[in-house]
Image (cartoon, rainbow, N blue to C red):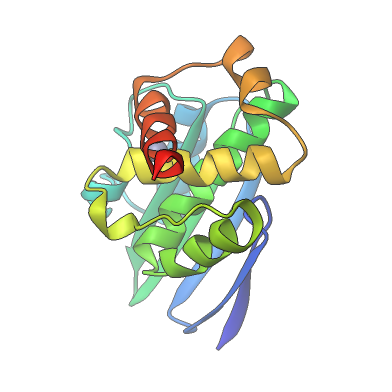
Length: 172
Ligand SMILES: [Zn+2]
C-alpha cells in the first residue's frame, strides 16, 4: 500500500500497489504529452478506460490519462499553464476524475460538507465531466479564489452544469 496525494483537492488516499498515480504538472502540449506517455508505455494505441478519458486528439487544457501495463494501472494528470484560478480549476478537475475512478468521491463529499456546508451526492450525477468540475470549483474556493474570478476568464458548458447543481443544493 502507498499514499496518493491529490494536492488541489487536499485529499490523501491509501492505494494498492497496483495503482500508480503521477501529477506531471504543466506541459507544453496536451496532445504531445499524451503521445510521449503512449511511447513510454510502449503503446501504439491508447488502452484506457474510455469512459473517463477525454479524446486523445482533442485539445483541452488538462487531461486525465490512464493506461494499464503488466497489471499496473498508471494514472497521469497534466495541464497547460493558465491564470492561477484556471490552474486550480483544471488541476482539481483532473484530480476528481482520478478520485472518481478510484471510487473515492466520498472523501470529496466529506470535505465539501465540512468546509463549504454543501451536501453533495455524486452518485446522483451521471456526467463525469460535471463531477470533475465540482471538484474543480472546490479547488478554486479552497485555494482562496472565487467563482466570479473564474467566470471572467473561463467558461465551459459542463462547468455551468456543475455550478447549477451546486446552486440547486444551496436553495434546499
Ligand atoms: Zn474532464
